[in-house]
Image 1 (cartoon, helix red, strand yellow):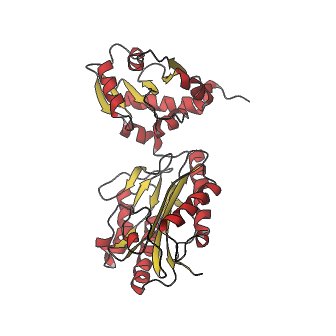
Image 2 (cartoon, rainbow, N blue to C red):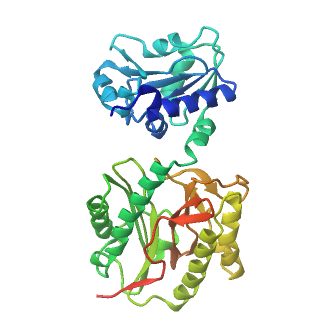
Image 3 (cartoon, rainbow, N blue to C red):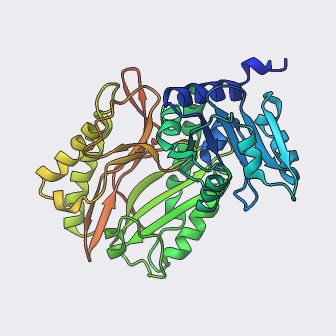
Length: 374
């Protein structure tokens, strides 16, 4: 049975967006190609110099303005059968003036998505002189921060797929190979195990593991090296995975085993602290306290977690000073780390979703230290 236009999920999300626009006391929201556009209308538009823009007025019907040569792609997306007005423009048209013409003459304030290119921001400023431009990220983030059941299912599927990659780590991670070689094999496996693309593969061996955002290098992995492996991809539904495990290639240094045990307790404490009503910063504190009391507080140098969904990093952020109460459906990483500069480091990361009575870990592969031997 065909979905009635009024019941279409795109129409529901657009109505919530319109309500958010009105509540924010702005006259319209403008959204260009981004995760925000995918969320609202299901159109994964490629960012181009040609303008694609969703127009959501506080009053009246929304419009999706697209280059005419992109019209077939827009109509083939979920936006195409939602009843959304898709407005094409030709090569000789001024698309910014077209957007301005779709707004009421009295428009005074517009919100722009945070991903909008600066050139487009300035072009809208020229097309609507005297109209105040405001950041729309907070408004859009509030719409996306609580995942629906279908979104949680998509994140759960992505989590299982990345778990399968970690379960195969012994196939690739061994002494004598470079980080780059291992990462190449991991990227192939991320796609093979159920993602449409591999977004990142961090392989930090030995001293490189002490840099949280080290990616890969030509360093040859040595026997006894701890190796931080942080990997993620995007699945067919458009939702992301992100999971870190730390391995040892042969027997690691004794000091590493000592602080890894601390880290494992801290990560478990962070996951256990998740439940509705607690603040984002309290989850950070639960993990950080364990590390600090063990004497490694100065070596935990980043926040405990970030939200995840259509993007790998999105609200909420688990960090001191964020007093946002957690709500059912919020999804985020819990990933404390300990890093000893010049020596080695470790991080454990799971994605957790807030449930009615706590939190569900979407990653199930063991957090115990896995020592890989040939």
